[in-house]
Amino acid sequence: MTMKLRLPGRPEELTIPALLARNAAEHGDLPALSWRDGDGWTTLDWTEVRRKVAVLASGYASLGIERGEHVLIMMGNRPEHWLTDLALVHLGAVPVTVYGTSAPEQIAHIARHSRARVAVLEGARELARWEPLLADRETPLERLVVAEAAEAGAHRTYGSLHAGGARVHRADDFEKAWQETRPEDPLTVVYTSGTTGDPKGVRLTHRNIMLQAVRIDGRTDLPEHAEHICYLPFAHIAERILGIYLPLLRAAHVRLVADPAAVGAAVRELHPVQFFGVPRVWEKLAASVRAVLAQLPAAQRESIEAANDLARARAGHRERGERIPAALEASYARAKEQVLDPLLGLAGLDRLVWTASATAPMPIDVVRFWAGWGITIMDAWGLTETSGVCTINSPDGFRLGSVGRPIEGLELRLAEDGEIFTRGATVFAGYLRPDGSVESAHDAEGWFPTGDVGRLDEDGFLWLTDRKKELIITSNGKNVSPALVENTVKEHPLIGQALVHGDGRSYLVALLVLDGEVAPAWAAARGIEAGPLAALAEHPAVRAEIAAAVDAANARLNRTEQIKRYRLLTGEWGPASGELTPSLKLRRRVVREKYGALIEALYADPYEEPHGSAQAQA
Image 1 (cartoon, one colour):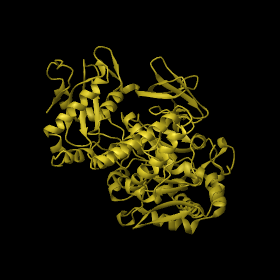
Image 2 (cartoon, one colour):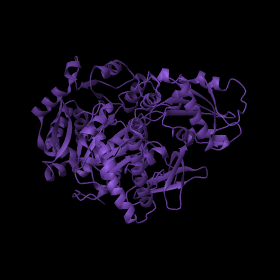
Image 3 (cartoon, rainbow, N blue to C red):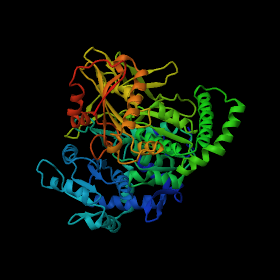
Image 4 (spheres, helix red, strand yellow):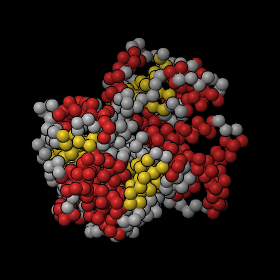
């Protein structure tokens, strides 16, 4: 275990309020929470955080919020959100963060299902979707609290709630309330992002989360009180763990980044020692670096590529558990100092000692790209239902392309069809029912079916194949992993996004999207006017390169997995347009519905094998 801080109890007995009390008492003057304020940062230390949490808890108690009651939150990564979450927990209430990109019907479903009477919102954009629910007889919602005072209208403001809490706060009442919290009490409900169907409410206890945090901490190697750049939505289990619960365990420093698009600027400014990104974030960062490299003189690119080769060779020895040869270590150290670190420093990535990813299979070419820069991405796997991580790579044992080995206390087994089952103390009890009870999702022996398919190697590392429900079964009865095919074709830097389709069909087709950062740089390097993506997607040279990329991918795939026809689209996919979840996972059903006519057109004419080449359609 890397953490050297005193724990205020055994891991299975910990609660979030007990950790905050320890932090204020023993690490009170250390920075806890920072956020952008104009051109600089405003920071609260742990003593100030606990003081504000106590006052806010009194304010929310004055609204009649009771122990066990759900309270909904829709705000970005701002201090009001973080502090509200902790204040509610200290009351014994259950904070439930809702994705800011949720559609009105999703919001209505969560409001009704959770039976929440109060929602805490950011401003006018959120009010427009929530106010109609106050008049909805099927929704218990009674009151809205708004962070942006100028946009609150007749609703209660966060500022007035805080001021009211300061007037009525009684320290004895606050201390008594949080000390009544038990490890088995609910800490939060996380609603799944809804890649298929309505979101489900996953209820997680203090014990689930505390054991998760302690076990993750035991598999990482970080300086004490390290900074965490917090930019993913708190509605996602990954950021709840990394941005709230682990920092409380570690008495670490959270830097809130309200706009996810600004995370690159924050990294460049802060030069963090740790960074977590979902696969799409790492893909975009890699694309940005590749775009810059494409503009460099050939001699400089050759020097960088030589340094990349040294870094990958060194990573290979570490991966195999071998001693790194002294000559290689010395050559790498020189290359790191003279070539890699100066370039990484421009992006703020030169001080990283721990980097990780999760939520979806990481393309192996992206993992190996970053290994060439001395950055080993410790890929992990887990679900909301497992309180986050089930398996994780770590510095003392990793396999690039795998998602690591199980955390302490968690068991895995594979069904005959490869589906992964898991059980342990970090696995949730069940899904929330509308009446407040919990519906078990385990079998008689306590195993939870994850819906993911994978394999375990001889060293105990887990390798993901795909989601069980997303596997394509062709009309010939062959099973195909769409993620495998998509990640293979995406290894070409021009292709940023892909969806493969073929369920019940005799062959696979694909929708492809140009990478918005690489494509203009690629075009400029070839004397092509770097216009909008829509124009580049129609350019003959771009289309020829995409055709070659698909053919190259097909050469590495078996006949059933090969893409026979594809369509190159003219715009990127994202959460705002609906194709991606807020955590940047592909919403396959949405893409298939939105582009259904294009997909059908790819099957419109009988397919004839054109000597092994895929057919593009305009």
